[in-house]
Length: 495
Image (cartoon, rainbow, N blue to C red):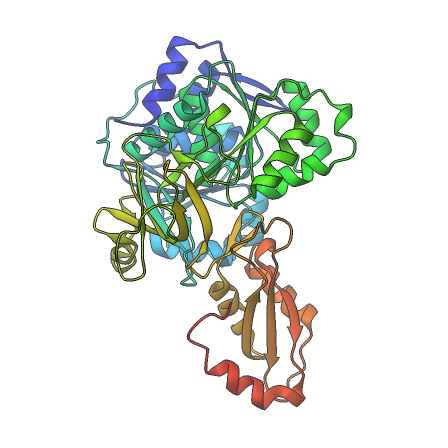
């Protein structure tokens, strides 16, 4: 079944119900579906057929919803990418997925299109050019098998390159309906979206889960406490999902008492671990219960604490569906008992079909039916999952995942750089909110002059700003010994 049938059903049953609220106005479910249909018609007019890949590089907003669900509606594959990525980052995804259409803003394309290295068959469409030419589309939802790929969502797993997780229509349906049921989402709920909607945490845990329940999505443009609190008060927001760093920032805001937050009933945190003591501090500061969850791009946010008395602060919670199973495996491949720490492995109908065009990586991440997460954890006697760090070489910067090998490879492309060492102060066993940083020790080539400012500018042209490390130049007097030491480790990442 096509995932968008669930949205279409709400639009038919409750056409006048609020679906999307922004600073620019409100879209009812009838109006939202009409925009989705018009985007689907644009794709058809552009020659897109079922199974074609459509790359979306769009900021949060109703345009993202329109063109993402418009692709799914006609059986095409949506590939949503972070808007703060550079063309250099996206071109590696383009080389992997070879999209038929790229949709972005004229502003982003103006800065990055030259870096994309698109094939001649790829059509580039800017929102500013497309909007005036949109025309009404058919109400019909294209039939696809549930096992058909709905989206390809790219993630990093520590190998230095992005991997496209193929998420099926069935994956999206199971994840959204299970998450909505687990949290008790209601049609009367209003979910504030401040996380990037291209990421599965927001896409499945907020957008999809809210829409299948007929709830309203409040698309916030603010990422500072003052604006977020104003949105909560103005739109009577009931559910807020975010990362620990943002909740810490909101709780610490000195003027929060000026805003009416009485509508909030649920706070959901994920993307990074939060210690139980901080959960309690945030509940006290914001006046609403906070529950912690867990998931991956490869299997959606599918584990979370239940509300009320069953919420155990400091744990990641329990599966949101009965058909989701967790096991903890030891280094020797043995099943570990409750309380023992090992790799978290998941078996679920929300698990991806595999990595797009990366069969070796797909085989490596699966152990039969079980997805190997690369995270360490333990299950207690009651089935609650406890987080104990990561085995994969990924740095978690306030919910943003950074692959140090990618950062290192970028810096090594600078013609004046001889060697690079990337380090992190991340402590996997502590609550890393607001403290984690990545550093790069850079050694210039002999007789080359290079400054940290030049290296940083080089990185900013090729990487999203949150990935750019703190640069430390190693002086010429240490060139010989340092390059010998770092050169010996050139094939692996230093953390």
